[in-house]
Structures are given as C-alpha cells and as structure tokens.
Length: 291
Image (tube, rainbow, N blue to C red; front, side, top):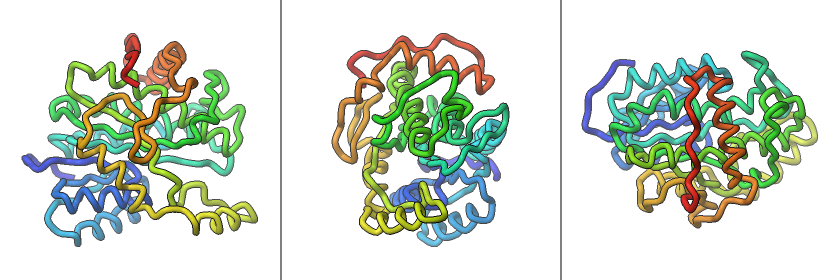
C-alpha cells in the first residue's frame, strides 16, 4: 500500500472483511471515510475491499496481518503506519470464539492474542496516529465477559481452556483495559469506548458436528450484522462524547464488578507489555468514575 496524504478522515477496521466488521466498513464508506480493512487472508480481504469499492466515493485499502500472532499484529501495525498518515477511527472488531485449543508464537493461546493482545498492541503501535488525529477507538466487546475470570498464569497459554470460558476470559482481559486506556489518553484527546452490539448472526463460534448444527439453527433468530454495526458506528462518529465507557447496544451500562478491578487491570496491562515485548512503563493509575 502506498502512503496517501489526505484530509479525508480515515477509519481502520480489524476483521473488516466479514460480519459486523464488514457492515461497519460499509457504513463508514457510505459516510465518506477512507476505510482500511485489516484481514489475515489476502484473497478474502481483497474480495471485501473490491466489494466496498463499488459503493463509490471513498478509497478502500487493505492491510494484511494475522492478529492471532504477535508477529502478524506488528506486521499489520507497520502496514497501517505506512498507509495511514492519519487514523481518525480505530475499530477493534476482530475476534475469535475458539472451538479447540490452538497455541501460536511463544505458546500463547490464539484467542487470548486475538481478543486481548491485538487491540492492546495496536493501540500502542498506532498511538502516534491516534493522538495526532484525536481519534475515536471502539472496542467491539461481548456481554459474556461477565462469565470471565482472569488467571494471569493460565489464561495466556490456555492452560484452563474451554471454548466458552476462554472466550469470556479473553474478552474480560480486553475490557479491563478500556478504562486504563481512557486514563492513558486523557490529555491527548483520544477517546475509547467498548460496545456489546447484541447477539449478532456472524461466523463467530462456527464449528462442525452437532454443536455446529445447533448453533446455526440458533443464529437464524439472531440479529443481522448491519444491526450490530449501528452502535459501533455511532460511537465511531462521536455522537456521544464519553470515554472509558461500556455500552450494551445503545445504552451506556456500568461494568460488572470483575471488570472494575483496577488492581487486576494494572496487572493485566503490565503482563500484556511483557508478553508483547513493548517497553515496560507503569500502567495508568485507573480512572475512578470514567468507567
């Protein structure tokens, strides 16, 4: 991708080649944003980019990176820094609901990396662009975080792996840090919020066998990706002006107690720095009242 200087606002959407991410990208393109998709599969990413390009108006670009691996996250970040002189919106949509235990680089469980470390690392590596544009960062979350438990020793490697529990645990890890990022960026003008878009009919959690058939049948009753995209786009546009908050669809909702544990959040932040090889700096002190 070639660097492009432009006054057109730029939105980066991870996992933007399908599901909610694609629906978010569609709406942002329609509203005049230059959209950069982050996808791990070149062919699928190009298909999505091409389809979005038919909507007209804005440029659509693609950055390739496997967000289930730390090396892939860094590759995606470098591609984005090259392609994006500005980042006005960053939507962390990519996520995994694992059906089996898969470990990647450094023995880290891949849902832990995708759901938790990828947003954390991208926030840090893209920070110069986010700060210069006073960006909006939107974390696509999940109501199942309330079923999560953080074990700093076992969760990163999936030592206590279970498909549902691991998904909930990794979503909780991610959500714990939203108020800390709000504090971290409090003087820079970058605003970050998390949103559970509802129960949406996407490919998340798809699997084979009887459980897969049951899940597909259930999904017939779930809402469309376009419906799920609406609250994400609303936060990306800054229609509301909070930071460090959690939204259940359109309604701001207090975080459950396990996600308001500032001491645990600081430990999770410090561990994420260590695991990702980022410079070790003191975690934010927390922001009472922000979340």
